[in-house]
Image 1: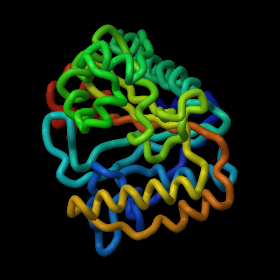
Image 2: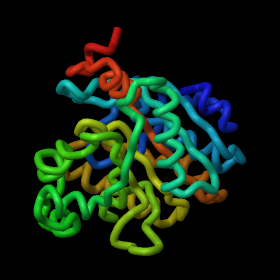
Image 3: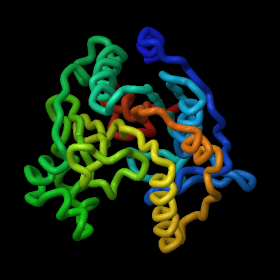
Length: 266
């Protein structure tokens, strides 16, 4: 993977694992560490680098999420995260598919890919529109039980254009503001990656984080300090960009035909 990024002109970076303020995501809980937190993702720190002039960056390192259980989850896992200025989220998807195919060598598991919108997938596999499922609070259940098991059965599948309410760090689609420029990548029903056309509006990002914090408070989750450095980066000006996060351990699961993520960890 590193060789592919270097050849494409990316710079490898390293940002702190111990941070003052994680992004207040609604369904991800951080791990506390001596009054601070272990990062759930390097996303905010890498966006600070974008605001300071970096244009194509990637990072491979440990991330931490509390209470992660099951055969697909670990509390400590390895994340590949990368960003490119002036790329839209579709170009990012094409690049990601090429990178995975290269990294896997002759293994056919990543050799082909296709695209489907979230709404198309919900109508096809769950018999309801994605926006209706989002409105009546059945989106998550239907995604897990009906939609995800059908994704990526023949090759990689990019699940595109999530409802706007389910993409707190991505910009809305110019063509349809009811959906956001977000995709997730699947193979054999397993989620491998999450990507955004990045939100660059500081006022809108603050509003979304405030709403997420209210949700977290109502559900007895950690209260987080404001991510001041990230807000300052938005105020300086975050360039138009797209970014992707990939679970490296899950890639190994597929390449090794492992049924449990712990089978690919030392």
